[in-house]
Length: 515
Figure 1 (cartoon, rainbow, N blue to C red):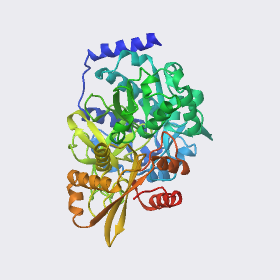
Figure 2 (figure 1 turned 90 degrees about the vertical axis):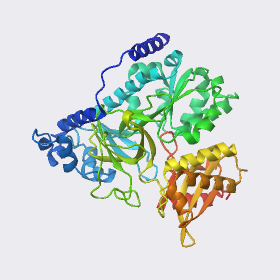
Figure 3 (figure 1 turned 120 degrees about the horizontal axis):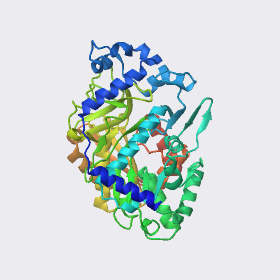
Figure 4 (figure 1 turned 45 degrees about the vertical axis):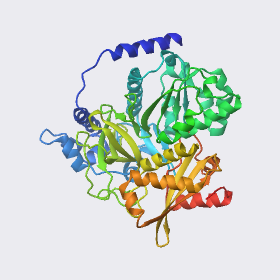
C-alpha cells in the first residue's frame, strides 16, 4: 500500500512538469461528435436520422447533426428508443447490446429512470477518473493520502439481473467495473458491506468498522456524508472525525451545491481538508474541479461526450421547465459567462441531444469552468421572480452564517396567496429554537440583493415569504418513507404539484413544523 501510494504521488509530480499540447475546446468537441456519429451510423437511431449523410464531406457535419437530430427529454428517448434496449434489442442507439442500466435516483419524479450504461461509457468514466487523479497534482494533497483508504458513500453495489441486463445504482455499476487494485487495496467500506441493499444496515456497519480503517479520501453527496461522519463521531465518543481518521485529507463531492453544507461538515473535522467538486451523473462523468481556489468545474471535452448549451429562458423553456419547440443551442466556443444554460448531451451510451435536467453557468468560459445553478424543473418563477437553486443556496448559507446555526436540509414551494403569490421555505435544522421571522428576513433580504427580478416582484405580485422550521431528521425520515433513503438520493430543493402535496401531507401527519 505504501509503495503504491508513493508511486502515485511520484507519477503526479512528474506529470505536472510536462504540459501536453492542448487543442481548443471546439476542436475537441468536433472530433468527439464525429467519433460518436461514426460509431452510431449503423444503429437504428443512426439510420433513422441519416448519420451517413451527416458525415458526408459535402456538409458541415456539426451543423447538419444539430439541424437533423431533434432534442430529447428522458421520456422521449425512453419511449422511442431506450425501452427497446431494455427489451434486449441490440444496435438501437449505440452498437451492441446494453448490459447495464443505471437507476437514476431523481429528485422530483417518484419513479426511477433507466439510463443505459454501455461498455464505452464505462471506459470513459474510468478515463475521467484518471484525469481527475492527475489533476490532484495541482492541489495541496499530502502524498500520504494516496496510500490511504478511499471511502465511497454511494448507493448499494448490488445489481439486479433483469433478463439479459443488470440494473442498479450507478455506484454499483462503477464498483463492479472498478480496477482490481483500487477495489482490493483502497476501496472502503469494501464489497461485502457495499452490497447490502438497506442503507441503514450499511451505515451501521460503516460506523462500527470506521476505527479499523485508515481513510484518506471520502467521496459522496454532502447530506449523507455529513450524517455518516456525525454518527461515527458519536458512536466512538470522539470530538471530531480526525481522531478516527488522522490522515483524512480530501473530500470529493458532487450532486448538489456544497455551500449549504460547508459550515456543518467543517464542524466535524479536526483540521482543514481539501474539497474537490466533481460533476457526474447516471448519464456520464462530465468534469471536475481542476484548479484549487476556483469554484468552477472544468468540463472535459475529449471524452466521448458532446455538449450543447441551451439558454435557460422563457424563449426556450415553458413555465414548468419543459423545452419548447424551435429552441436554439450554442456550442462550447459560443458560450457566455454568467448566463444560465440547460445542458444537452450526445454520448457513447446512446444519448442523442438529450437534456440531463441540469442548469449550469460558466464562471470562466476560456477554461470551460462551470457551476451547477439548478435543475430545469427546480426553480421558482410564479410571477417572474426567476429564483434559481443557486439563489436559494446562497440565501441559506447567509442564514446559517448570520444566525450561527446548522441547516442540514431545506426545500421551497410556491403558492397562491391573497389572489397573488408567496414562497414557503421549509428549513431543516437541529437548532429548533431559531426564530422563523429572523430566518425569513435574512432569506428575503439576501434574495432581493442577489436577484433583481425577485426584488421587483416582492413589491408587487410576490406578496409574502413564509418560513417553517423543521427538525432535520424529518427530511431524512421522509426520504425513507418515500423509499429514497441513501447516498445516491437528494431531497428536491423545489417542490411542485404532487410532490408538494405529498410533503405537506407527511408534515401534517408528523406535526413537526414551527412557523
